[in-house]
Image (cartoon, rainbow, N blue to C red; front, side, top):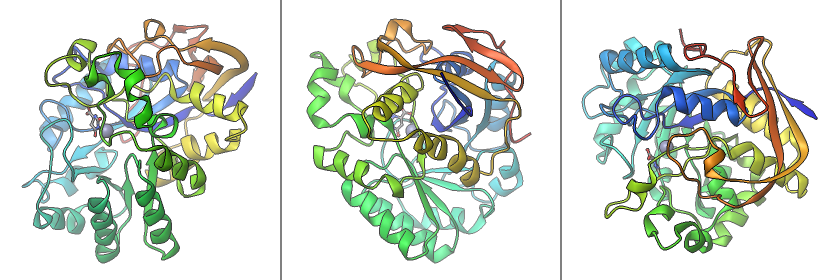
Length: 354
Ligand code: DOR
Ligand code: ZN
């Protein structure tokens, strides 16, 4: 048995308000606990998006009633909310800016719309960028010009990780996260994931080439955080004419990482640094007292969607054999998950930005 601190996932799509048929604060946080995650940071591309005081209140109200693990909620950057965000920034995980196209309405194409956010948003809270390839390069230049930290979400390409490495070497305040699906899957796996439903392989950023995946593994020291980008959509939606992009990931994160430890590709301390220490530092999150998880590193099993707590009902890792299982989660002194059962009640989770 190994005992680890509770993991922090800085990138989760909870889907509430608005799309609770995919997931809600209850099922997302059950999924988190089953995965050994005791704190999640929730993304703002909900329906409506979280972009002002009243929509933030909407999300926090639902979370307050339903969340079973600790959490904070991101605000989304829109075309005309840069002036009002500073007054509510202390209540939020940080600011998320969607600079490339993905799921939801929040998207800022024009760089003149980026500027007021970089100027106004309080520097003690991070700006997280969904920015791919050249857009990412532009985002890093913004960090340098406006002299403030940025965190790059879901790095997936060789060119991206190499540029972030170079930017860090120049002293630019950029941090980044990598998702398990970009570390463990490449374009070559899309056929197996799809099972003749191409929508199942859709995710943003798209899965990389084998060369991209290899570059991420080779530059793991440049990677600050592991983040799932848990993006649940139902199988019916994934198999439809217009499939939304996104993979669920909360319950497969740690088993995949532990399997990589068993394979000699990672060490346990990498998991602690990138899933606890660094996210806490980057997002200024509080310690969770009397909080830990227990994993049995010897148990081998098969990943099966039917065993998961997420509402979406599928996983791109279906049938994968992994080694390492979460057996127990203790959150603030209370056993929240044990032997496959969720024991924390709805509403036990705390808003860490309260
Ligand atoms: O694949 C994705 N799905 N990428 C994103 O950036 C958003 C996410 C979602 O919300 O479904
Ligand atoms: Zn996301």
